Length: 463
Image 1 (cartoon, rainbow, N blue to C red):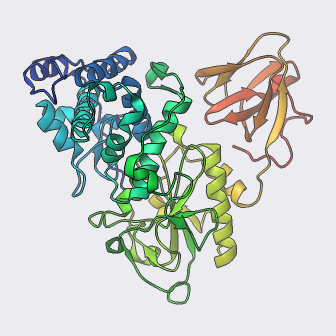
Image 2 (tube, helix red, strand yellow):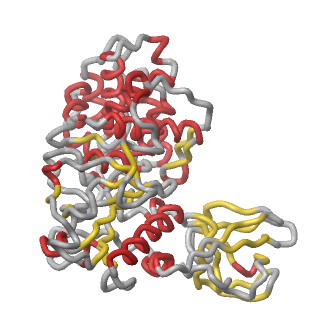
Image 3 (cartoon, rainbow, N blue to C red):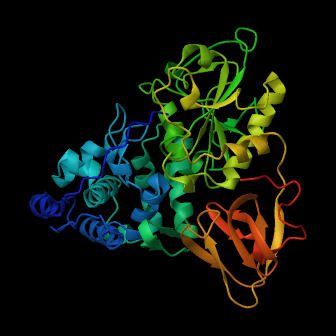
């Protein structure tokens, strides 16, 4: 996917502009009273922006947060657009098919620059768009108070033309409501999990989340959601063209949003497969025999399989063990079937394609881990934390210099997905520089973990 160069985040806040503009903006429906929005440049103000936008437009606050989490994990990426032209923490879109950015400008009176770059404006714009969709769906005040009645407005916000993909998008938002959300800088925005029973309406007849459309005939675990015929070239590979490479991409957008973008005839881009961050689910959009438009180089397009991974190159939290392992299983399958060597000469990133102007998969993609998984080093270790009573800090990387992101209780069992070398620590089991990855960006020192092995565990990959 396209990744444009990052620009510095504006230092001057837009709060004063928002206060003045929102005070003059026209109401949506009958419940949106004038209110001021503040620039969400700090953790507290991000939470306040959700509270204020939800109250202003009578949209359930937790639903608004879940939508932003599903789209961007509440990261506005300094106002840079996603691959499908979406901006800000709420992914307001401007492309030939979807125009939620322009709708937000019309409904709020805010300017496009503010809606693209200022988090408070962006959240306000998304709330206004959702409220307008609720009004058009006939949701009255009592129905708007029921989060389960917002399913169709949420699906419409995603912009998918395929009902199965629209359901995939909306289900992702409601799954976050079910499990809860802790997101934003310093985990400042939270949503408690709760039971949900969304009113899917006509989308209830579409394929459920676990099976978009029909299943792939190329790769058993994949669902099939075909790209627009305007976005790939029909061929008869490997007879017409040899398949020599696997090209790794990052979507710069959400899973369902990327699949939907491939179905947009104006996109002029596609990939063979796309993986979801949360659980490693995979959807195929172009048959392997055909040529997906993913590499930006015609020769490499003809000779490769393109694999997209949900997320953004600058945020490693998207690159979960579930996604790494599921993607590596596909790549292992592809290399077996097409005789592709399992090395970095033939399994490459988009940025390594000759003439590439893209940066994906970026510096946060763990090539060492991925190639070990592709080559069959797929074991998961286990251990018991032993600290003598106190909790053990969990850090975002393999060392004491990384941020503390949680803790594990003494006596707790842990799964170890991979191991890395880092800061040397002296603990219950001596001195060690080995760190165990127990989840996405979650590491604990091996000096405090009883694994049955001295240091590295046989069969467990290195991070």
